[in-house]
Length: 409
Figure (spheres, rainbow, N blue to C red):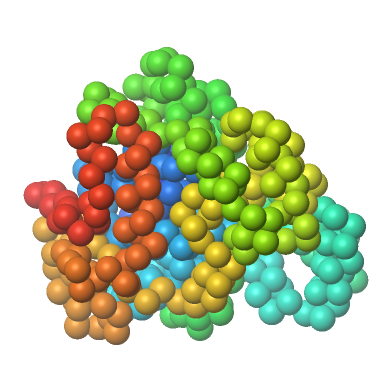
């Protein structure tokens, strides 16, 4: 039995994901695929376009055998926290032989070399990173500059070093390196593979034919443009059903009033306790929320070189979900449970093996006993459903009421 793990958001699932899944099976020769998938809020600091159960259904219909939820506390974290949470779950399952992820680079050796430097953080690199951060630039930009300096000082091929450090300019490369860092940190025996991203960039806003970015698909779906060429028919059916039910698509703006309410009623001291708020940002946030009425304008007022749009969106989600600085200890620690969102017949077999080998609690049908364990996930869903236009589907505690989705092969 050879099992591969993938880390996904499927927001929504599209033909590029099908390409990745087929290439994964070909490259790793795996018999089964387990997906760790973000729940109702995603890494770029936004609500998922449609809920996690709809996206689980998409995954199972695409040939994923078992879908596990990436706990909310990791799914809305930076690339480092997101990757560490997901890899820690896959590592603890006891059945995963390989992982396979997309990257712009497509070169696993280069990605592994860079990940080793970033995981071990030599003193020279740390000093350089701190120097650039003090200049007020964003962490990703500072890290790229520090890595460039370190490689130029320690490796002879300057031209090659310049090319390698530019790998950090690309979103999928950054996540790939974080996955590899996490494997290194956990001393995991899981082998890593990567597949080159094709056709478009991560943030490409225009449809690029059969394989288009999730960003362009979301944008064009909102504009009611035809996206059928870029997604499987069953994904289109699920999306249209969710829209018909008034359960999507959801955007950050759906929660604009709630977030503005929270910011206006919090004191500056309270805002300073929100995760990732530092260096006096609380003062800018407080002033901005009193001088604007919507989230987009708020972000524009407080955005700086260091605080990018994505980072600010995550801070707003932390505000929405009441996630404070003490949650950082959780993010830096391996996941403490495994939540099952869905499976097929193969997934049933995998679950039996996981229960024999995994030391973590396996939560399939959550109950009142799981409230403390799942508190962030339960709260996230309770708030997420408030963004629906249909009141019929806004009931609380859905995480304790919905069983895993079963997809018969």
